[in-house]
Length: 523
Image 1 (cartoon, rainbow, N blue to C red):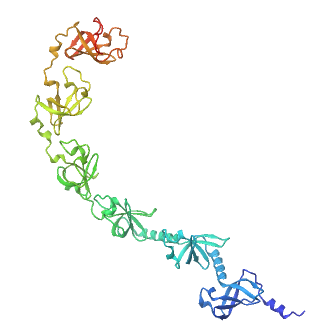
Image 2: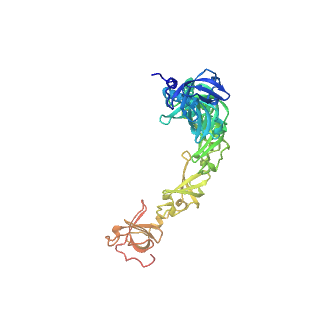
Image 3: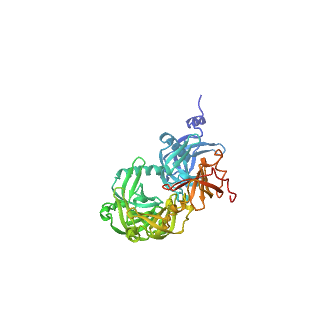
């Protein structure tokens, strides 16, 4: 059977399906229209904007296009070069790239949440991934061509997400590792101050940051890094430590000069008098700077011979210039003990010239303890009145029974030890010891009236009419089975009899046995 011309024509056409990329040839150029022959029923027409490279628009050039179908009503072929290029790019991307691959693209427009990037196909660049740091003005990135990292590929939707930030971090990391490899401890390097914190300065060394800690900025004392450095300052620093694993570099400024503690013991031998500046006050003392980087401590006990200082701020202020004496030097520990009171004469050096044993003196009760009272004879000179030296007649258990802080008292000097800075004082020694006279009438069996002064579990202390005090032991109380405490009250009057008097121990033993019952009276 002879084929018709129509059948022969249709058999010569390509068997094309919609969505296929097919080869074509440019057969005509009419202004902005480019006619493409794809060997189908009709030719297709492309707008010149379909060509990303205008130099490709040449008669006879081969071009691949995407077949989008045949319009029977118009008798035209729908084709797209741009879509064919994108499909080819997607195919190439799947074949040659994966998440983490580096690609180059142009940021073409802003969309919600970021940008669209032309990689030959469109990819999404989130705004949070456009730069290393958050950006306020996103418009500055429009039109920029840059390398980026593929962070996500959705094969089903043919979506690609890219990150310029990840690419920059990768590049910076590589540059940082390279720079880190060139550094050595002890080397002097140049950098620029890029950030200042309370604890130090971050210095840009070029592709790598180093930390200049506040303690490594100066041998002297500074309270904040901004006292020495401002952002943008060019610095020459010393590399003092490198942590290659964590990619951290420690820098120093003070290491450019010698440690002032070297040979400081030769400049400040013990006994040297030096002028310095008060740089810090603490409850236990004052730190005095002798020179930048060299400080010593004046302990609170070394501030004054005569004043009782509870805090150094009572005598000093930060910034004061003071004269001090070097008391001790610890070169290894970098510690100097200083004294201020040593500038003045120690009042104890002349105490034996001013006071003699047996002298009477006036003083002020400065402090009370369980065992006695400290009496200030003059500023810086205290003596102790022991409880046993407060009264001939009474047993003083606590100094507060006799004295209170601030009382003006007369005392007698009992002993002086200028070397140990101790003076013993007495109050009872100001009068004759009345013991012998007062105990003459206290013969065994003699009865007297007395008042209870103290009630204890082993008996009663009773003060007799002559002022002396005796003890009624619990065994000398009739009906000893009764409990003493609660049965007698301080101030209660009793008739008592003398059992014995121990002159050596100065003790009087009394009894209630064989005498009349309690005298009626005050309780």
